[in-house]
Image (tube, rainbow, N blue to C red; front, side, top):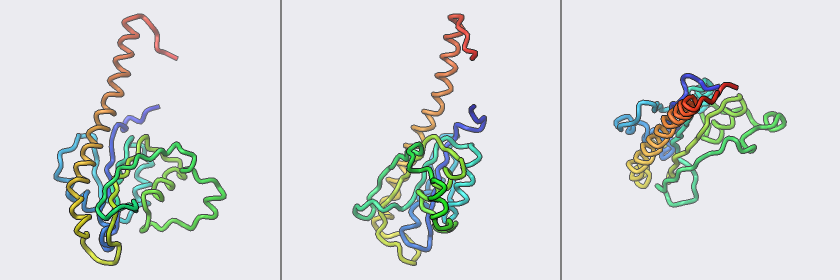
Length: 194
């Protein structure tokens, strides 16, 4: 059954502003607030509150999650990448033995993988997950982004806006196609009741 609040997209920035380039996601979100986004898009800075993000996703309000974070890509600093995560892959489901063996979650040090594993272990679900990541140069205790990561912010914003627009269009088209199929079936006198 479809959630009446679904059809929304959450763009969530995560990162620690006191660890140099780890603030990438936070800075993208700060600047994204000035961008024109579809009405179905919510934008939020979660900073170091990854556990809070996982719990917020449990309400089923969002069909799509776009995480923005510094990400180790084994590429030169400032390199951007979009990763689409398949949460239906069995690798995202923790077995009871894995839960017992894993250390307790640190609410202030949760990377995207930890957030998504927690969401799955709590029984939550998001239909589509994208991570817009940037290879950091500096993760030392300091404020401010390195030059290569700061130079990647504008392109990252364009990437996030593009993903949000495509996903909003996709989510809008799905109900319209279903309604159209129901009208065609009704016109032909075919019952769609199960």
